[in-house]
Length: 120
Image (cartoon, rainbow, N blue to C red):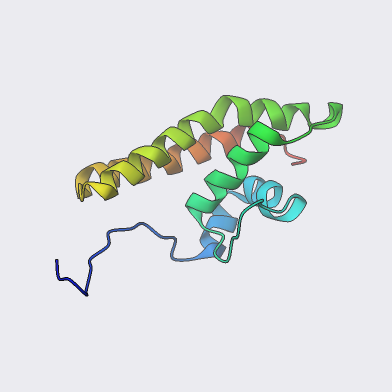
């Protein structure tokens, strides 16, 4: 690595529309019904995980939304752990571990999406 030019390894979402199509109820909850508490110019997979985890930890839920809160409490810890594994793998430049972690993040979000009530 040069003194002026550096190399960074990162994961990013190619298309917000793909995130919206794949996880419509999660997208609506994280980005439409609520606004993330952090700057969010790109609403990608990793931003979705962060926004949902923030809602899981700090959201206020009324009785109607208890199913939503339950789904987040059950599923988001796995998504957050997978995101951390992804970040760790990228920091070590471990492509194989990073690919496995991306699958784990997406699988965890798939599970939470299926657990969400249809009205969410």
